[in-house]
View 1 (cartoon, rainbow, N blue to C red):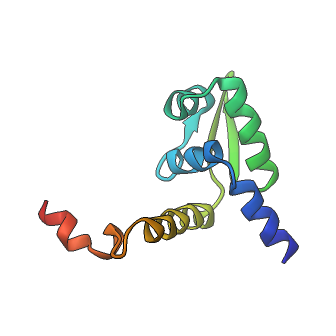
View 2 (cartoon, rainbow, N blue to C red):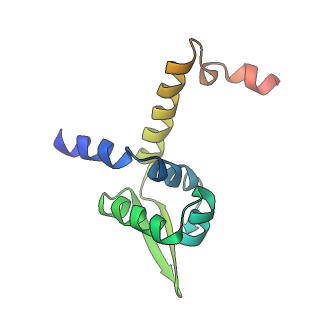
Length: 105
């Protein structure tokens, strides 16, 4: 239980959630992530270090650049489900319950 609470604690930061969303489908460099989340590369590196310690992201070095990717699909799913849960607090019938209606628009 304690480890699960630590995972939620690690994800309880908007910048880290944005980083995970950015890494959903792609491996990205620190500078590219910094551009996406609108933070400095130094700040993003600090968040990535925490995510790496928590084994949420993995890294590889290519020359002088470091690339990050999600370690597995679980963080992606946790963040997606958290966003879906948040939508429930905003709407009685959130959009994620109506994929057909979104496709028609």
